[in-house]
Image 1 (tube, rainbow, N blue to C red):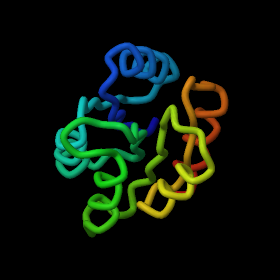
Image 2 (tube, rainbow, N blue to C red):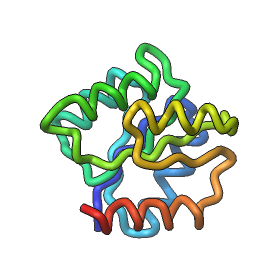
Image 3 (spheres, one colour):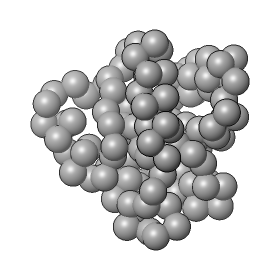
Image 4 (spheres, helix red, strand yellow):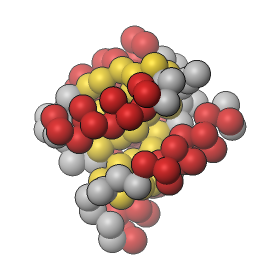
Length: 122
């Protein structure tokens, strides 16, 4: 099963998502802010990143741009996950390098399909 990095600052969202992904058999790595997300992605090379966009220290848009600009992490699919559901937020996330976009509250079945689609392309 793929290894997924969850970059999420909200403890309740992070814990719920990590538990549900683990129950589905995924190995899960965790980062609580953008700086930690960059470090974990660069050192652990996960198969996929679920990126909250509203993060402390460095936001998810900037983290995504940096990861996609780095040859060592540019191929890792990033699914943006945010409470911002405006079409401009999706466009901004995709322009920052995210490969897909999903909204909160999390529709877990839909997110699992997006994860499967992104990982099957690797």
